Length: 50
Ligand SMILES: [Zn+2]
Image 1 (cartoon, rainbow, N blue to C red):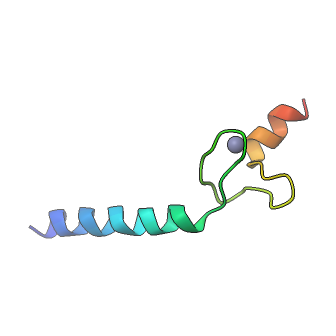
Image 2 (image 1 turned 30 degrees about the vertical axis):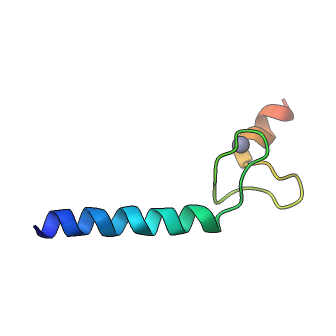
């Protein structure tokens, strides 16, 4: 029972965290490293500049 409760709590926390993160304009993923100026995550920024 404890494991089930823990899983539900983690899922809820993850949803809140996702909504709080900026969305990358290229891959549309909510990531912590999205540049506020380019609206791109670090990975997409690297891809576009190679
Ligand atoms: Zn991206």
